[in-house]
Length: 115
Image (cartoon, rainbow, N blue to C red):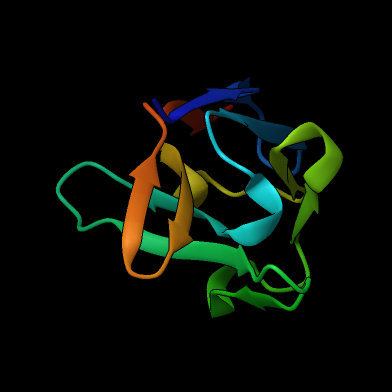
């Protein structure tokens, strides 16, 4: 059974930093594309960043230069380093593992950016 467990969310002031992590079990993570999505209240879920099995990365324009996605296949994990956080980054963040059109999702972790 595939399970994704996220950690690292919380409350942070504008300009602060957070690191989200997602650990997968039940799969060989090196074969999967991985990503982070977010959903703010009243909005659709959107892609934040993703990374292919070969390590190529892609970022939403709104987070370029501030967020960094990384993966560690030996630990079956994907992380998202978030710097210079803004109130508009407030959302529930979900990790995603994808292979051959099949998606697996974490349970979500809340990130709130507020003074």
